[in-house]
Each structure stands twice: as C-alpha cells, then as structure tokens.
Amino acid sequence: MRIISLRRRSLCLVTVIGVAAMAVFHLWTMNLVMMEEIETADMSVLAGKTIVIDPGHGGIDGGAQYNGLAEKNITLALALKLAQVIRENGASVVFTREGDIDYYTRGKGGKRNDLLKRIEIINNSGASLFVSIHTNAIRGKEWFGAEVYYHPKLEENKELAETIQQALKNFPPGNKRKSKKDLDILVLKNTNIPGVLVEAGFLSNPREADLLADDEYQLKLARYIAKALAYHFRRSVAR
Image 1: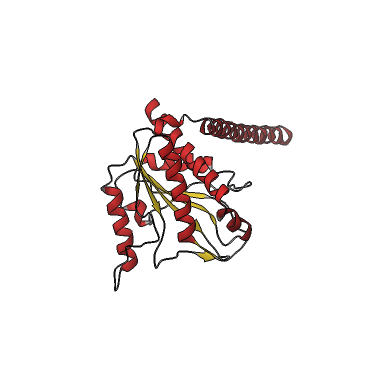
Image 2: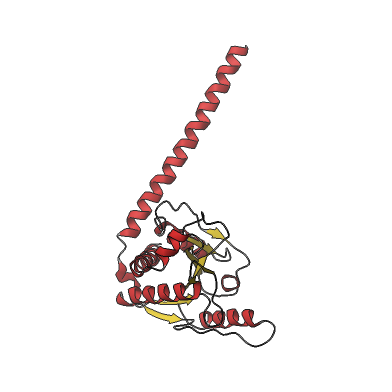
C-alpha cells in the first residue's frame, strides 16, 4: 500500500510540475508573440490621436540627482524625443511642460500644487491617454531597468502598462521588471483618462545613468514607447 501511495504522490507531483512548466512556456510564447507584434506595429494608427506627455519634475524641482545627472533634464529630453516620434506618425501632443519650468506655489503644499496643475492639464486635454515620464533612484547601485506603473481604476491602464513594460524589456538588456499597480501616485489616481507612469531607468546605477544621458538611447526608448502606444491603439480598435 505504501508503494502504491508513493507512486500516486509521485505521479501527482510530476503532473503538477508538468502543468506549471506548460504554463510558463505558454506565458513565454505569448510574450514573444506580443513583442514581435510591438516591434512591427503599424505606426499609422497614431494619426489623429492626441497624447499627453508629462516630463516629471522641472524648475526648482530637480527630481532624483545621481551620477552628475538631474532627473528633470532626462525626463524632458526623453519627452521631447517621444513627442517627435509620435508627431512624425500623425499624432498631436500636449505637454505638461516643454521647458525647465515648474508649477510650484509658495508656502506649504507647493509640490502638491505642481502635481495638481499637471493633473488639470491632463484632464482638460481631450487626449486619448497620457504618459508621465520619470527616472528611478535608490541607494543601491545594482538596481536597474525601466518600469511602468498604473492605477487599477481603469482596466485600460493595466493593459497599457503591460504593453509598454513588454516593449521596454530590453532597456537595458537583462531587464526583468514587471509593470506595477500603485494606488498612491497622485497623477495616476486623479486623472480621468487612461495613463501610466514610466520610470525609464535608475540614475543611481552608474551604467544605466550613462545610457539614460545618451541621445541615441533616449531616442530608442522613445521609439519603443511609441511602438507600444501604436500596438495598444490597434488592439483597442480590433476589439
């Protein structure tokens, strides 16, 4: 009886492992197909769309500052390149800022007022969606990789975040980060159109900081975000 019992347990274990392996393989295949479709996305679907681009920080608010770089400068440079790419494909762009400015007010609540102004611009834009651009930083130098945040109030937010995250899986190579739900980011919580916040990478990682400061890398990042937006719009139309 013990032998039979052990055989049954072994069979169950093998079955469970097999099912798990199949699930992992299926997910890997789906991600591979999705990446190929993002790579070859028809960019013409962007024509006629309006997209808000929100370069994080600015003015007196430099954001994260590591390795001689200020977040506000990286986010603006990347935002301008993203705008260039999507405009080339017929979309219109609304910026929350196009220069080194801020919306701070004097006294208590200055930072919050800056964010509320950005939220107002987004909500009054009439746009299809928005992308807020930031860079990450942490004490440890080993952390790296682009990461996308979303608020779960709209299912489209999650879908958009997952699509952009997949598009940025090689930024830089070896990036294994996944999109993340966040209930507390003000610009995600208080906007009334779909949108995400993209952390383009870690300024606290010296190698990634060098990449984020590089014009060619910024343009490549912008192109893949734009490809992800095109894929997202095409998928929405196909439903």
